[in-house]
Image 1 (cartoon, one colour):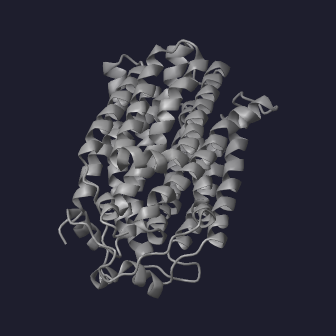
Image 2 (image 1 turned 135 degrees about the vertical axis):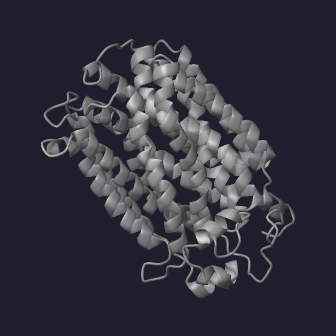
Length: 460
């Protein structure tokens, strides 16, 4: 089938039944735990590594480990989850394994300093970041495929919107937790471990929430057994028999829509990587005016707490806006909705340059929240309508290349640019991120949306 040709639901398959809101909710509930852990990682990893001795221009090189691991892990997990069926199901075994490994990494990362007599804490911390992100990917990748497995095209915007809402709730709580614990008696000073108590206990709580949320999805949602799955998706015997080498063939055969979305994802995730890596130091230097060796100061931790709370704001906005995405998409279309949201994110990031009062950071994060909700939902809604039968997991995994590649490129060159072109001022990396968001908004308008055509033709 040509990449540009819509794949009709009636071609040897039965229309999938519509699911209730409660079924969609429990199907994606595990993502709340995943994003709780991601929020702790995104908001605090830079300052943990800084407290272990990393320089600000070195941070991208430590963060680069995460997308490198994701680039390898997600296609593999997608490939095998397409072919798995056991007592737990098709995707659920990977949810559980990823949750247990992720929780262990969340516990060990802030305690990396305890082994500094054997190996430098910085390197142990970087290793924990790698293990953590690999485990997050094991748990996360099958969730995208599960939504596409279970929902008809006409419900996928709602399905990914609910998933994004739960992502937002988990991220809000995870982002706010360090500040909450600091206000309730947990120390913000780095002790002998090198990491403040409010950060360490936040990671412990995150580990528990991660496992509990995944267990809710495992016990409260269903997957179609193989025979029923084939009834709704058709059977792709070649895909069932293919080995690992098929991953490379699938990469070369990716649908036109996926290739076009790849450019959108490149701009979006290059911008997000810069935001996660550099915002704490950008706010510390540009807004708080810190200079010199400030990484272990209380003021730097206060700046970090403020950034973590601001990240909570963008996740809260994303959670609310996610519920509005189906309605917005009715008026603007899928591509128009994503373009509008990315534009808001670009404006929000650029506005940080003009902030002098840390409290104003909250307003910048409103635009970022609109973009984040759309980034987590709309590309997958558009993508899911063009994937051939039996390939949902692998193509969702391959699609991750367009998330990890821009982060890797940023990780390689981002620190050098900040040090040598921006004179050690990370605020300019945030401004560049804003312009990249605007580029993503323009490029999405040129994407071919096969799923939207199917809905118009009444095939789903």
